[in-house]
Image (cartoon, rainbow, N blue to C red; front, side, top):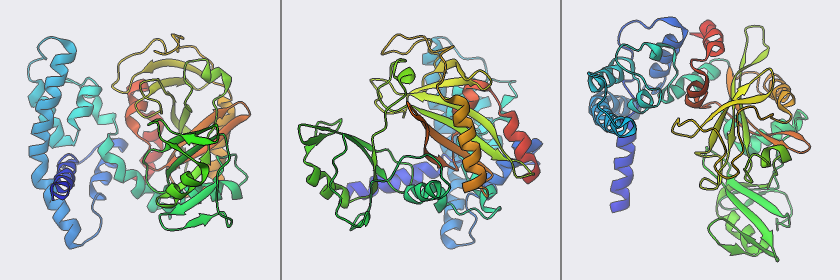
Length: 390
């Protein structure tokens, strides 16, 4: 009973943090028009369910915006240790209601009264617009959301990618045909659909163990996987140059690509994510900006935007470090977008940098603009490409 009530509360809370599902006034500029599209397409169907959700968002956003604005102003005061500029709470709430700027991102971007940078920024609640642009071009979302299907497309196109050792649907083994009993030294097991995290399993003395200290025999691990809708992949190892920076867990190079009117893929933005000992995966890891010409790290920040000069585990300086196979990685994602997923207008690629070269991990329609903009400011190339579609 309590679990169901909490689940319903969480859904309602999520709805009141989205922003209005409509635009107030006439948007200007390509990013403004894109954000207006995102609001219109959040609840596209003319159904009772979508009408109810749209109504809940419209009525709940003023409450949610006020609640979040007060909380974020409190966090800002704690961070600076001094009073905020006069009118900050009012300005934060006004931008949330008038322009749909999430209070959290107001704080992370360090906006303030009189600051007009938000007009050129893409926010987390604009995600539906990215999917809408690709659907308008005939893209099938399953081509990227279904990780097994993604691997199949990559395999058909001859693109280096992390192999799928086994696939389960929660009831049966879908792949391979023979019963799967793992024997690889390391495995990564993750949900086949969605963007949930995975589990790292390492083989030692005939038993697989994970970060929580569980130990299972290979057959027991296969039986556990059978109960979930998941895929099993071999555990990849970083290039030695990446490991030397201080991360044992797999680092990922996130490259965003977009399609031009001529049908050519171009790089829109990119960053490198390094894990750290207190965050053993790249979730909440260290975000590194890139010099796309030199293929080197320019600067690094923590997940909350705090600047970082060195890796906390190794003490290695991050700025200036060379990224192995950077230009090969760029060539790989451009080829992948054009050959395997040309109907998607924008895609965010996760690339593993191994000793043998770059390997595709996955791609996503929603690729998180926040870290790109925290590192490098508004995405000029995104605005140029999206201009023709909004």
